[in-house]
Image (cartoon, rainbow, N blue to C red; front, side, top):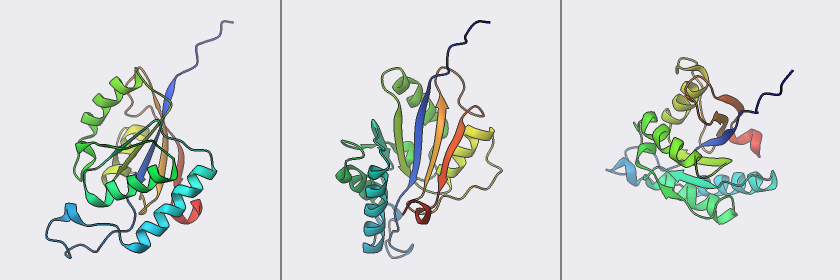
Length: 172
């Protein structure tokens, strides 16, 4: 019996932004900031993730203010050195654009990547990666996390594995 090579994969954490100002308060939805409760809760979650030993090689974020503020809190805690704005993480972003980016990134770095964005996009993307579709109605709460093992070198859609789906209350 010969040993098969182990499948190399990337850990990808889908993180929803923290609690933000109510819709309609700001004319431009992209400008809605985190509220104080959102900042505090997100900072606590970031601290807890550090205590659990997480560290992200790369942190991509939606360009919307609430997502960049969430990313800043993650970086301030030491989970990543810096974050990078990634347009496909804005609401309505395209999973295929991110997958194209991922293939290039996987050839250079591994093993952990964090994406900070919005619902329902993040849970839809994660469901597509695991199930090949998004008909399972996962819900990612504000400041919640989905963790996936995304395989390198093959089609990720329908071939990724869920290892973490947690609302903030289970992290804290």
